[in-house]
Length: 193
Image 1 (cartoon, rainbow, N blue to C red):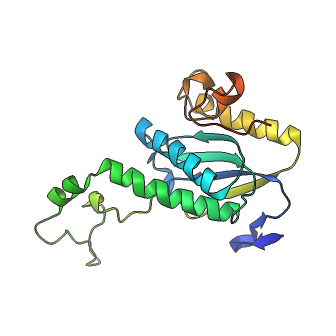
Image 2: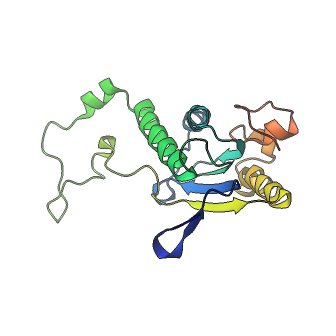
Image 3: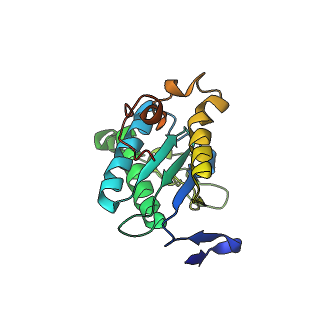
C-alpha cells in the first residue's frame, strides 16, 4: 500500500520490506551533538522498538540526523514509530539539558524582548524551547534485497568517518557497527540479517 505524501512523496507500507529512514534535527542543528543526547536516543530507540515490535537491523545517530534500517512494526507503521521516537527523544533531551529547577530560575522576570513584529523574540529565551527539535518530514527508502541492505548498512556505519568525526567506525559507539563487526557488542542489540 502506498501512502501519497505532499509533493509526490510516497511511502510504501505493508510489503514486509525493510525501511531505510533518515530524519534530521530542526534546520540541521546539532541537537544530538552531546554524547549524552546520542546515548539517550539509542536507549529510547530500544524502548520504542520493544513497544512497537519492529526489527532493528542497523542505526547511526549523528549530531544532527539519524539513519535507521528497520522492519515494519507489529503495531502501527514506520511513520507511527518515528513520531513516537522523535517525541520521546526531544522531550527527554530537553529535560536532560534543563532540569526543572534550573528552568524555574531562568524564567525572565520582565516581559520578553519583542521583535519588530511585536511577537516575543524566541531566540532571546532559548530555554523556553519554542523552536522545534526535529524536522517534520523524513526520508523512507524500501529495502528488499540483500545487496541494498548491505549498501545501506555500510553507508550508515561509514557516515561518522565520511563526516570527519572519527577515523574508523569502531570509534563511533552510537551505531550498529559493533553489533556486526564485534559480534553484538553494540550499545543495544540489533537484528543482524
